[in-house]
Image (cartoon, rainbow, N blue to C red; front, side, top):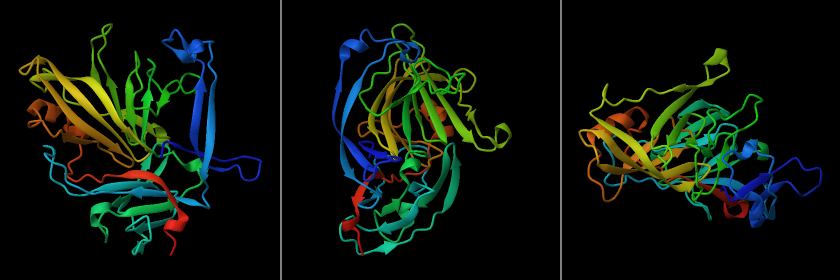
Length: 331
């Protein structure tokens, strides 16, 4: 779905709709040498996009497919079995079907809860409790509201805050899993949970994992991000586990996934390396942490480090968002 760009607000008839990039052209000469802080540079680079129309709200609806499973070998954080799927609360005509082609089941699902994220409300559904296996959620949403409550990846480019003193965005949104973060930190967030990972470099071998949660009642009701206290080495843990590498594997509006390698840089397990798969989904207040197919049990202190932000469910919703042609789901 990140390949689909909703366009609205045009004064010309027939322009509003969904588009995909058919081609891109750039001039690398204007981008080299790479600058540490492009936002502070006077150098600009022109990028040309060739957009192809993919449809409109009258030809397509948003479809969120699920494939509920219990991955093996799982994790050590709990044994709940809910498979939560988050949809924008502003969505209209939300339906549940059993297929995106000639569905035989059509229902209006009822959310089990609604949560308030930084940029809007999110309705939560439990895909494991619906009347059909692997339900598909269909909905319509105005173009200018799409993306407000989605999951996102950011490159901080060395800035502590997403906004500068003039309220201009100083971080860069990342859509490519192959993006190189350079001196910036990697941020994965969904308006409810924000994970900031600082990978080590030759210039600065310090690495860190930071977590924040969005509190809509903070700052006098204006909402603010507050730090989640993670256990610390020496005070709480016998081993200092730090993120050594992040391999983004999927960036989508409903889910961001990555494989994170942790290294024990001090303590009892110093020198050991352990890899986990993580998934942050839209509407999730915690992150899914999974053992890889070839891994042993997650080390005790790494479990303790991640426990405050890790999901306790052993079910994975397998959520994936895209466009569905109306003609495929007509009654």
